[in-house]
Length: 226
Image (cartoon, rainbow, N blue to C red; front, side):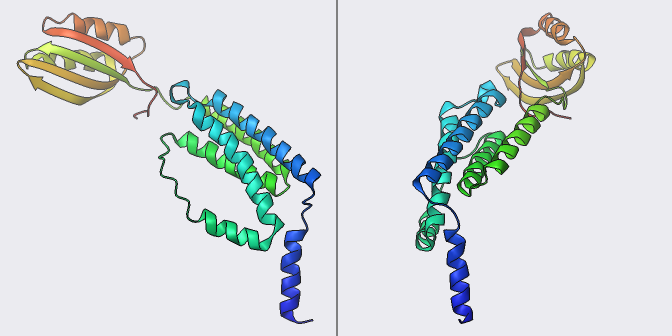
């Protein structure tokens, strides 16, 4: 037996080791579906409600099951696996991922599908447990106080001095994000991080200024500025 025959035999045996019986395929797809439902529930509970997308969540579950089916198909035949690689290489995804956490869940769904398709459900179970605990704990670790946004409309171009004096008095950090001057009116957008329980006082004192027309304070869950 030549080296070519040995290599060919070992290569083909690598694809034939996996049990491709109908019963085993149904079991693998059922396990993959259970993990898909778990990922669906985890995404719903761990994602911020502001950015939650039901259609994206459904696609996560679908991707898990589809990936499992693809892996099972690839293992059934060398020819099919090569054709699958060629077919998938022309696929282009142009939808931008707006949330980094969405990318993590998408990679989790694809990885789970691959693991289940390879017949290693134990690894998928450990991955789900460890990743859920890690996401739950890290999401609740305080990393800093998110800044607020103070929006002020005032009469006259000199009103900014009085507003900024109050901002410096009640904030530990501040920066002017936007300054608009038109027809004798000043519009300011200030990002700041107020001192403890100073939000209401700052808004009240800014609104009490004679030149101020309106003032409002907004909170957001975006990036924290240090």
